[in-house]
Length: 235
Length: 99
Image (cartoon, one colour):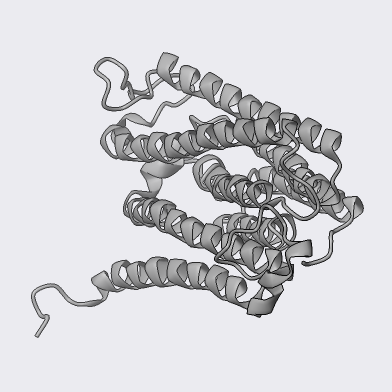
């Protein structure tokens, strides 16, 4: 294998000296990114596990909290993220094919839909704030009975736990989205300088892996936080 | 390096994911009892597999990468499964008569 590196005529300037071939370098980077994503699975996995426990402890309270979410917001945001994943996958494809202009446009589209997701999320958070459904903030937790929800006061205490889950899980997800947007801006700046082409597109590929991972987390958050328990007429 | 997927493949995956999002939205409004959660999570799992295999291109990655991805899911199954077994079986023992 070592003699491949000695072939000076074919030496790619992007090939680091400790790798034999571009392909080996690419595979190593992909594997390394997946190891990082495994730590992310553990990070979100802990929260999903805690959610599972509390949901089984307070099923009625949970069903009542999901009535305060607007699933249409959640569904639209899921669709927005899926579009951004599509443009990301196409951006990686464009980078591999050396289509510089398409790559830059697709990265901008990805950033745009990422920001659109965060915008919808901000609207939702604001609605919860106005609705006094924010625990831990003095004066912003009100779970007494209303005309639309005549039977919810009994859940006032456990519902706080479940709203905490909602804000922490979607909040950490939103932080990951912000990181992703900054990452995509960096990749866009690199793409503008013509850094990527058919032989070297590793940064686009592994940033794309991160973006798709954040999408997957949302694919699970959406049914768990917005949809489950909606049909149970407990309140 | 692995071959480039066609634009058509990506668009078809995107279309499937979008349709499934609205399917899961509408199915959640139908009363299915305990099956609501099962259906919602099955659809989410299917969507995740589409994203992983095609958008993240794991289907064309090296066997070592596939092993690592599989290990991540195996770990999740262990975490959620073991914890669920603990919480489900807690009430099986009569109180005060553990031994």
